[in-house]
Image (cartoon, rainbow, N blue to C red; front, side, top):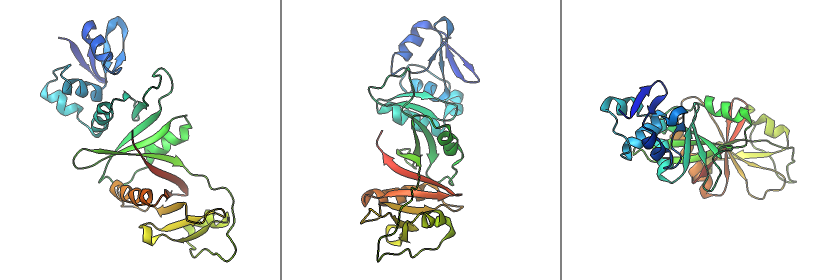
Length: 245
């Protein structure tokens, strides 16, 4: 037997096999005595790559949205480490002994919006991107970077005015931003600062019941017209932009 199943995944006990697997894209976490710990996502990927032969029950137990995103990133040639909260990704030509380049949080396209783990990551203030990977019905993955958005004070240009009085954007109105309807862009509002001729931002107020597909649609439109989508959610502002891993 070359491995043992445990609560964290599987432990490769064959030293030669452990070295072989780890040397393929730094997969797994080295342990004492030459053993190698593989999290469920890593074990499934090794099974897919024919480095291991998992049982049908192990394959079923290990399958998850996290694995779909993990496999997609690995197939793109990236080094990925499995974190308790998400997937730690290292950009190409990045030293893997230091801070990860990004943490990626898997989301299913038809899941209702939940920012809990996103806020948890952003509040850590670490020097790495916070990304989500939205999985579609074909198990393809599209990636987005999410950031906290700050609004410095500005002012409205002469002969211009805001036409919106929504309490959700009161902070921006108080800081001098011009806010008008964003209907033609498929969002709630478009936002100007003093320097802008065209609105740099499109704001969507997140309400209960929308899903990640709705967000993907907004970003697609925003990307096409060179505007940043900003989500307003419980008095927090989150920008979301498409990224290619």
